[in-house]
Amino acid sequence: MQRCQTTRQHHNAFTLIELLIVIAIIALLAAIVFPVFATARDKGRQAACLSNTRQLGNGLMLYVQDSDEMFPFSYAPDLGNYWPDLVRPYTGQKAGGNAATIFLCPSDSGEALTYSTNPQVIGLYEPSGTPDNFFASVIALPEIAEPTSVVLLGDALTARGGVGLFGGGNTAPVEYAYPHPALTKDHTRDDTWCADWVVPATDGCNNKQIAWRHSGGANFVYSDGHAKWSKPGRLKDGNFDVRCKPGVGCTGKPTPPDPAEYPAVSPTCGGESALNCE
Image: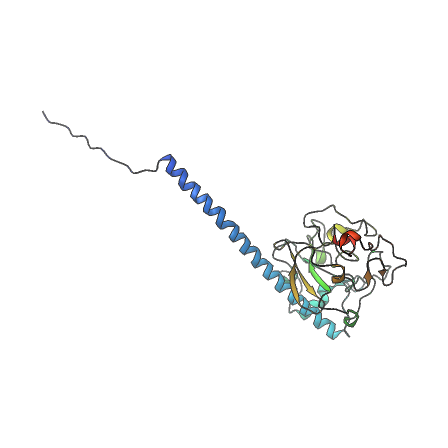
């Protein structure tokens, strides 16, 4: 009788425990590596945005040199232009389309402009009558006592809808809220906030704030043209004030000052206005 031999085949395979261990190791590595990648990406965007603001600062300084040391208006409706239109020729940027890349922060989804200016330096020109919360004039560079510390423009909150500059949506206003934006509160996603001191409180002031979009900070260019990154709370009244002073009022505005126009110095805010301690 012929004996049949049975051949046993052995298959090497992961047990369930081994498979779970492998998955756990992969998840652990991903948890370690992904935040590093995200941080590196954010730092890259922050650097690109800082480069944008630096170029804009250089362009503004060139404009000032060609304009008897006067800064441009943020918006001149009868002339049909905004400060980016006036500064663009000094930056080498073409008008329209995707060419105007330095006006867009890579960390934001804005379509036309993601930077706003300091209204105490670059004011709104409105020949038909100036709203209470705007200046109707600009100033000259010599009027800024410390240009190295006075903000000229920086990262700004972009509107979530509607038509913005140059016909595009999701764009920042041409200037920050008057007299200057709140500094310590993060307004990046706060669509309904509106400060009591803005007069009137119905002009979309919630979209006229600083956007702390870079590692909890924002990029700013100063009135001498240099640019740097700052955290919330580091900038104070003096970094914006040229024509306004807490508890004193604003040049060209009624006196004594209306607290709704500029909050008085707050004892609980380190000698600064309430704008710095929200």
